[in-house]
Image (cartoon, rainbow, N blue to C red; front, side, top):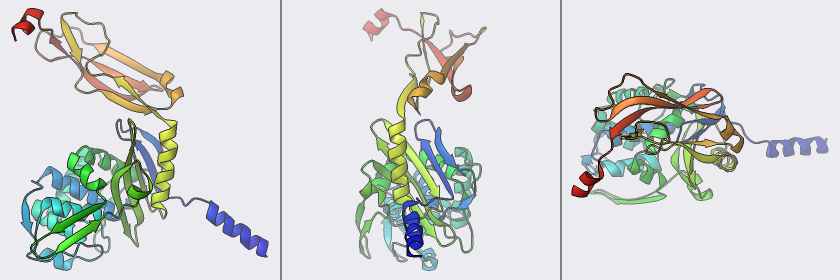
Length: 343
């Protein structure tokens, strides 16, 4: 009997805890490197606040001062404990939102940006549609789910973080381990609840979340050399170790390749013109996948490319006959040497 108990205990210890859904994404291309139930809808708890922060950063001056209103009286759960009449900047509130997961910060930002929680949720849903989060619906800016519920998927939340980390201020706040603040009422020292920043040296930021109904949720990103990965997991009881293991695994398996260089397309075209795309294209691939990549270039006939910056064709990158990206090719007439010298 004792032997059976020992075996059961060892199995429980050695078996990794599985999340309800998990996704690993290449932050540069958006390619999914690993997915499990990634399109299944779940409650997302305070990972909601990634969108709250993203909408705020896109619709405000972060240095603007705002006075806390009575909306915080109704706040419960995780908080930064600000009071009505207290004056903070939008930036201060964003630190309280992302580091301490302050529900009172979320309500204050919602009043400032959207006029109310409902107004903020409207902006959040509009932004979600613009990003391509097809399976997401926000009803509040904080993620509490007793009265209203925010639903999303691992895939959609990874898409959201992919867009959010394009914002320099979001990256800075999300990575901060400690933030000190003095207001007209109080002095604060806020520590980041994201422990991955301390246990994994390549971690760059993200947002955790938890409610009894949602369980533990985590959306994070990490950068190693020229590779950046995003991981999202929902209903995951071992979020930090789970994400760390996945980062170590997928960083080791993939290499970063530039498949389109926007200024050096290497295609046959009129020598009097420079051809280019608006952006380069990088993607993480396994070594054996590189041979399966195909580049297709289509140049349009009957195009008057003597006009400035005219679309003259398109370039498509495929992997296993599946399109990864498609970009317009532009042409602009080369400047003569004597004109350059005159300038």
